Length: 252
Image (cartoon, rainbow, N blue to C red):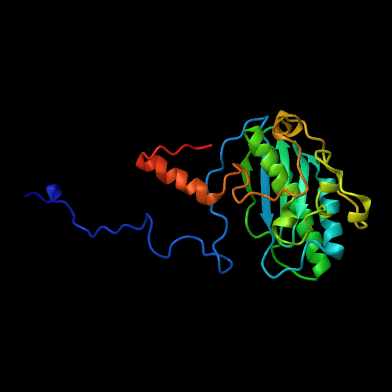
């Protein structure tokens, strides 16, 4: 065999692909928000957005932190094509109902909200580092049922965490200015409230008219475990198993 016809042999080593221990390590004990591709969103579809703060930080519902969050929500209620329609401030996370033409508007609007808020909170707490270490999570709302459940989930979230009385409203949310209650809470049941953040009026059909087809919200309603479909997770899982096995189960 001539020299130029000879093939050189060498050891092939594969460096790519999935392997044990690869990938970004979680910042805390629990893995962070997975970087899945976000669901497609149409112009007339609102979003339920959730953003969490880092572990070990003070509560967002108290004192100076609450005032800063309310001020940030007011300043970003209608910016870069994203409108904050409803909100709920919990100890270590925020829930927002937002409207936007597309996801680029949401990304710009959320950055305009979270970046200056993080700097202000760090200054208040006398610390450095990330306040919002993980990216925000969102769910697309496509039906009147989902819209109503999302409103209930945001406005009644304090009851879900056991920090708001059943007959009252969460004063760290937009519930005091919400006009879709079956009954308005009595003045006696509502203690002196902090300044409510300025929010943008809803403009999508789902958040103005569509959700009302299923009735106004009652103060005694609690958020469903599966907040958008309104179906408890156990029943939803059972329906999925039945559908897979051909047991005649139906999704509602």
